[in-house]
Length: 463
Image (cartoon, rainbow, N blue to C red; front, side, top):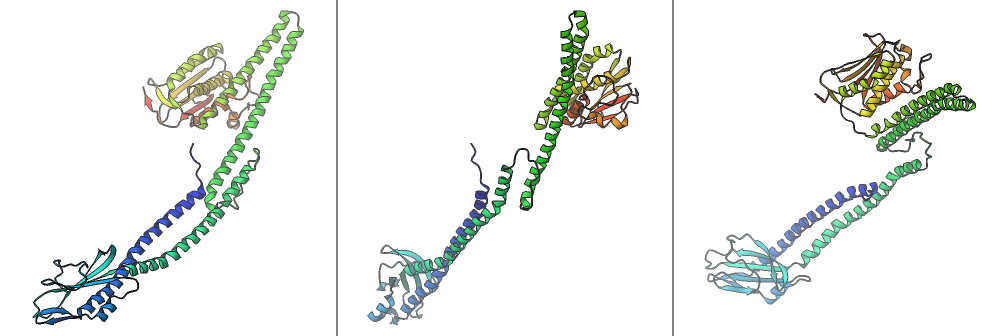
């Protein structure tokens, strides 16, 4: 199970990680910067010590002599924190004065009087060493080097003091910013918690829009989406309630007739006298069966909006098969049922059961309201888009009624037949779910009604 993500934690992490990273980078840079300047300052003092020793070197008969009194040596080595070591070395005669264990650079690339600095270990302690070449008069017969080494306690103390002086204010600033950040994020997310509480406390019947007066601008997209959903739910629920009410009304009529005729049949003792009542029972049962079938089709069309996948479908093959199925009903009404279509089939995306119901309702409607001994033409076109057309030679549909006939349970006043007003509503629902365009007009060929279903999209394949 996936762990729930917290917006508060996400915001704090996204803000804290860069701050910690930049603080770490700044600390590293401060360390190396401080190290550079501390070494530079103490290296100058170390060089001054080496140059002070240089003043004690005398040249006697071409040879260097170190004249360093004990008092001067004590002053030179005195330090309350660090230890200082030195030596004066002749490349020809070796050690002239000082400590033999001091690291030296004899034989290195030191060809001028420029000082050389390096780190070394003396008596298991880290030391900083400076090495200089002593410039003697031209009559000197040897080369002299001075090495001065000093432990690094003062350097570490100074580095620590400087780093603390730099880092402590930064650390305090980060802590204060973090505390303010936590409070700011908590207060910033409070409207979301209030919004969630407000929605949670609503009753299922309350679909009124969420007020946006206390909501941040960035949350308006969410509230607008929820309000849009509430609006669609309210319309859907209202439509469903109207549908249930109308369905109950439509079912009540055949059920009442069925009950009445059953009571009439029970009162009759002669079978011949029962026959009219039984025939009416059959008519009521057929009407109720037809109504229930259409209601079930409407219920079946719902899942398409929830992501039902349409499948490739041969349109001409489907239309031909359905025309053959309805041919006996047309013959029963002395009507001619004509199919016109291309030789090659057209592949569209659709649901076979729903499209059969759509076309069946259009053909049934044409048979019911067309002229006796009339003609019904079913056409399939390819260009510009795959289209299905049903035309009849009936009286047609008045222009004032063309918008209303697609409403559920609506019938044109004075129309013949025993329909329940769901057929064309089903046609409209199925066309919408297939994203098809439904056009209603008059047939130029036959003079009656003309229903055209245009499937938006070029045919996938023709065979």
